[in-house]
Length: 565
Image (cartoon, rainbow, N blue to C red):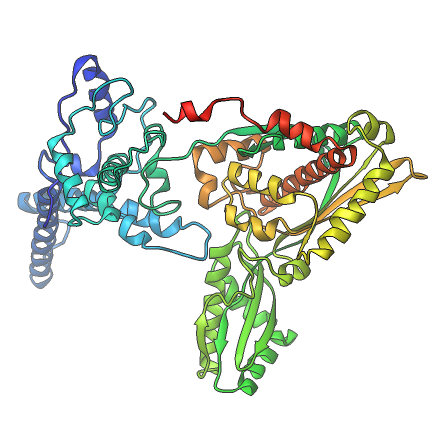
């Protein structure tokens, strides 16, 4: 059953009349061209476009046959041209912008779920400076406001299953309104109020078709700052989004110890994103023939030309293959500029697979990803070969700083690192987990800066090394992280809060002078913050201060039983 949605909103009440009218004028959309339902407006402009085009084509055909100059036009032709242009502008404004947005701005991930269905027809206008409270939720301390009859009907249709929830943005052309209606439908279906989940104050148009589908609100997460982290001559303040008490404070203490010892240095020794499709052949011999072709240096230039067509930033670096029976796993590695690059490398791989199909017609591509990449899974191939940015960060901590700031001594730190991070992790059978808590820092920075949090699995692979130097007086500490997967463009990096955190680090967006340098700098910041976090936690454990600090900073004194009532 089709539902017609009017652009006109109910008259506001009380003193909010002027503010709401100003908001309405600021959010004019393509569907507001006529004071009619969107469906009727679309039909009128579509008919106008078709009629104008047909009339002009007929007139121009007659002029060509009679040798009349095409630029000689009459009044009716002028009206037809104006109608054609006006209707074309309307149709492009209504249908074109959101569609292009959804196509070019997909987030870097292995899964793409019905983005086309929810990625068209929504206004991309910037949010008003002061969003009005949600009429669907009411306000604390007051009775629930009556929902507009128009929205009430839509909520009822969603609850009854007559309108799929994921098409609300397309039907309404208003992302904020769609989220509110979806939320109210969810409340009625589940009987849960979810009052603590905020709705207003977020630009839902900014996530359409690229970050999140079917939104009903957003989660508030505190962001702390550790620093200054003195790294490669820069003084950086590191944003960390976390709910774990002590984490930011501990990392901050490590930053202080590093700064008072002259700072840390880092090096990115490898930079390449990977994608590994899997193909099946009639026999293992045929699979081995393609393996030999791909790994033959003589064929690399040809493969590079085909691969690099996918993007001006994608540059093929190499291909390594593995076999399992008659299945061939092909691990492509390429540079991706300042993007994390999963989509970019996938497009290049698809180009190569299409090219290979001519010479290997019996190749059956099972999947664009065969898990030899390996994305969002702990894997030895990433630990050995690397994925994303491979970084080493190191510092020498002076003896007096170890005693004054870290409250321990060099010998205890070295001994604990061997027994805990090296031997203990080996006993546990760890894969890339030879560290104290690298994942803590990586995940906090990833969330704050709009990275893919699931990629902390491989990005947190780290080995922490501690040695006594300068006749045993000072401490040399290093972290080696072979698979830091970060980007400064695409995905969640374009959201306002995450973009602000990237700007705080000076790595917002793409670096036009040196493509890829912003993403590499962000990777070194992650490694530098891990270095600080490792230094502080190991020191707390060596001094026996871990439990006391967590009891002080990581326990709430609030009576949560009363807060929940």
